[in-house]
Image (cartoon, rainbow, N blue to C red; front, side):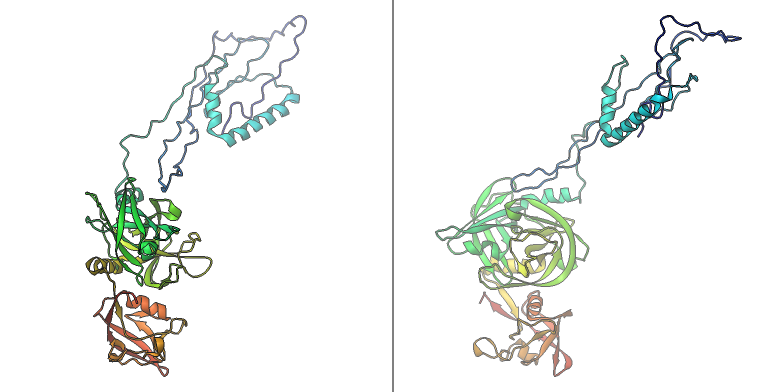
Length: 486
C-alpha cells in the first residue's frame, strides 16, 4: 500500500538572512519558463473501507443469517502538483502524486540537508505501517481533508438491490421453504411439578399430524399437556395419537389444526449416500427454528438410546450426520439438499460416553432415524395407535459385542430363548448360535441385530449368517410380528 510522499525527502528551509543575497548569475541563463502552475497528471484509486460480513443476531429460538450491505468504498483525494516558481530561492518542492498514481517528473533541486532525512523517512515508514494496518480508514481520512482548498471526490458503492433473491437449492432457500412445516414442541407432565421439556416435530399431513420422537413427548403422554409452536409464532394444543418406544417415534395431532398446513415432503432414506448434504432444523437448547448443515457421515450405524427415565431403549440403524444436533433438536427433520425429509433427528454421541439425549453439546456425531422406517411406524400409529415390530422369535445376548449376536441359553423368566414354532425355530436356529450377518449387514452385537431387524416389516424374508460349533452357515428367516411395547 502506498502513501503520499513515501520515500521522498522534502528539502529543509534555510534560515533567512537579514538581506537576501545576490544570486550568482549563470554564464547563459535559460529562457524563463512560462508563468503559471504546471499541472500534474491526476489519478484516483478506489479502496474498500471494510465491508461488514453476514451477521447472526441472537434472536429468541432462531438463528437466521442476515445479509448486510457492504460499507461504501471511498475514493482517496486527488492532489494536483504545486506550481514551481520561475527561478530563485527557495527551489520548487517535488510534485505530490495522487494516491496510487505514478510520480510526475520533478526538476532537480538542491540536495536537502541530510540531518533531516532520517527523521522524515522514519515518519513516512511509520505512516506506511499505519496505513497498512487500518486500510480503508486512511483512504477515507485523506479523501475528507481539504487543507489546501483542493476539492475531493467520493464514490459510493450501490446499495444491495431490494429484489435480491436466493437461488433455489441454496441452504437459505431450502430452509425458508421448510421452516413453516417445523414446530417446537413444549411437553409438560401431569404431575404437580409440571416437569417437561422442549423438542421438535414436523407436519406430516394437512390433517394436523405431527411426527416427532417418543422421548420428546413421553413425559406428557399420561395426563400432561402438549403444544406446538410454528415459525410464525402461532401455537396450538396437541394430543398424542400413538407412541413407539422401541422405534423412538411418536405422532401428535393438533387439536384445532389450522388450514394451510405445509407438510414436509418425504425422501427415500435407502438412496442416501455418504457425503450427501444435510440440513437439520430444530430447537437446540430451546432456540426454536435453528438451522444447521452438514453431510451424511455414515449409514446403517447401529444406535441404542434411552430417554434417561428408565424406560425401554430404542434401537435404530441410523443415518449419521455431522450437522450440529443438540438437546431440543430431537424429533426434528433431517433434510437432504432438495428439502425432503430423510430422517428424524433422535440421538447424539456425548463425550460423557454412550448414546442418548444428554445435555452435552454437539461433537459432530448426530443420529437420525431413517425416514423410510419412521414413515412406516407413523402410518401404523395413525391407523391403530399402536406400533408393530418385526421379530425373529429368539432372545439374544445384549451385553457382549464384537463376535456377533449370540442366542441366549434361556429367555426372560426362564422361558425358551427360541420361541417354539417361531421364525427362528422354523429357520433352524438354536440356543448358542451366533448370528454374524443379517440381510447382508454385519452383526457385531445384540443391539445391532435388533436395529437391523427393525428396518424391515413383518413378513419379510431375510437371509441370516450364523456360526455353530465354529462353522459358518446360512439360513432364511421370515419375520414375525409383535404389537405394542412390552
